[in-house]
Image (cartoon, rainbow, N blue to C red; front, top):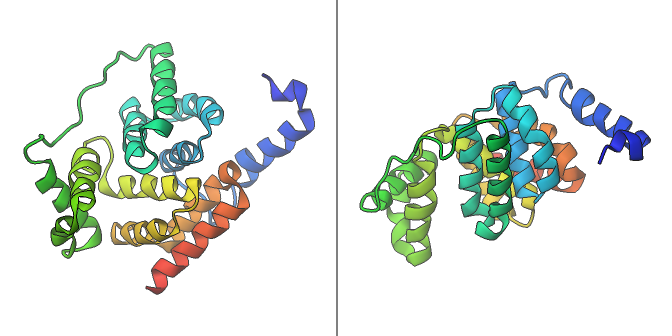
Length: 228
């Protein structure tokens, strides 16, 4: 449906805010690839399937690669679950197919079922510190976290560890109710070089898609992470 036809006043103000005011705010700008990385992850995090369908083609036009787009969706499985991730994977496949991209894409896995735990622990330690080398022993959920979340997804090619921490921040920020994890991953981002100013820019660029309450909560979590 064309909102310019059905809701012209709304379309005028939203487009001005999201695609002019926010993008061009002095001191809050991001490189285009990074901005789209954050926005796509945020739309997945908030369940915005229709908006994701609108934005993904624009992202692909501006340099988002099919592999990077797929990696965002795959990693969302760990932070939203298969039930909420699947519609976005289906939409991504539809759009890529419409654009003539042959599927499946080249494989990006770097681990096997035999070494995924070991490699996942190493990824956790690289992001959060040496103490994570023992964290997987605390119980089966911790072991799954190391082997599945980090070993199956964070170790894949297509996105750097810093970019993966960025999209995780966006998943958590956008879905809300994950403040303890959002504080922890704010720290993880800072450890990867995504400092407070960078994360504030990310929140600012994603605010049109998740609104003010979750954006302000995210800023509070960033500040708490910095204090700790």
